[in-house]
Length: 393
Ligand SMILES: Cc1cc2nc3c(=O)[nH]c(=O)nc-3n(C[C@H](O)[C@H](O)[C@H](O)COP(=O)(O)OP(=O)(O)OC[C@H]3O[C@@H](n4cnc5c(N)ncnc54)[C@H](O)[C@@H]3O)c2cc1C
Image 1 (cartoon, rainbow, N blue to C red):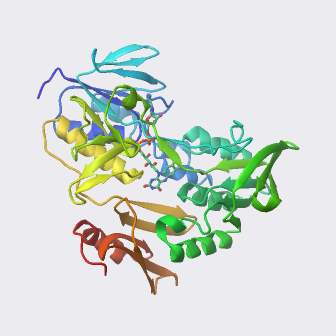
Image 2 (spheres, helix red, strand yellow):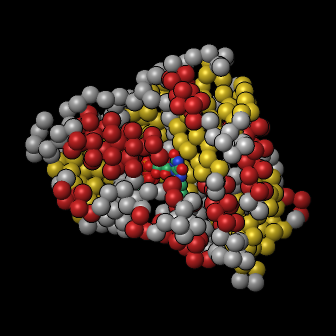
Image 3 (cartoon, rainbow, N blue to C red):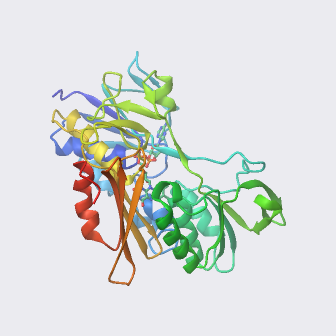
């Protein structure tokens, strides 16, 4: 291990921070600099559509580590610092404040929200959700009696719609999907989520496209399919994300399936450059193929692997990817390989609050995923079944 080595991490999300943490924990003694475009030290993103949006937790509860941790661990955070280019020949990261030389670089630039390409969709007053600022802006606009259109029935859209409804707003959720998450999780789960959203008072317009958005009377008029319009003071796009791979692409790193190609130790195609989190298309040893996932826990895992390897240890990605989604009081817990399924077995169970179910996802008879609501046993055991490519239960 080189004591004079300088590791520069680009991105202050869970992937970037956990790389720094793991490097120190594994005994790494080099210099560590963490560059982040955001104006905050690394913080928890999941509450932004949940407790933080509802005002149940404050900003002071979001940081992943206290400022003192950075000092104690000799990790230098440079916030509000955007990297404009990665120059592999000179081994520098170019920022507005000058070049930052590196010996090893970890790219952890995450994702950014997509704005759907409809007339009026580029209006900056139509909100998106990724950062503290995004969540605070939405919160400041929406309260008791406000009207909101949420576009998109992915997890961001569903979670935000429920939280806004819990804040007393009248929420309409518009989605192309015939049922929330139907394509990803199947018909039965879509119907359950639909019931939950309705139970929280969210008005659903499913299986319909947004055709355009116009400003009207200080708010917006959203044109949906069939010539109908929905008026609202606020519009939120929860219409997916795209990985921020520009730096990697321009530096000539290998990109496939929209992600930076890495091996299972998070090494990219370029010597001395690692990549972690939402941006990667990473090899997973248990799956025996690369995975593209956008989950909090997997970004932490990737960072941990990269940091350990950088400190001279050995680590590789072999766990099944997964996430939790929390819509009000309803929690879904999920493990699954990316790449879909051809069979979904829905099993209704008796749960503590009456409702509980598990869905086993299979591909060619092999268990490739599990999703559980109030059945922790299946969630906990299911991971192993997925990782071991067991037959579909
Ligand atoms: C509101 C919300 C709720 C979510 N809830 C869940 C959940 O419940 N469960 C779950 O599993 N996942 C959830 N996710 C997804 C999860 O947050 C992401 O998968 C995770 O944050 C990805 O981590 P990352 O480190 O790859 O990138 P990010 O967290 O996106 O962090 C990337 C960082 O890099 C910085 N950056 C980018 N480009 C540059 C540059 N050129 N120079 C300097 N800095 C740069 C960004 O500003 C950012 O700080 C949620 C996401 C959002 C937005």
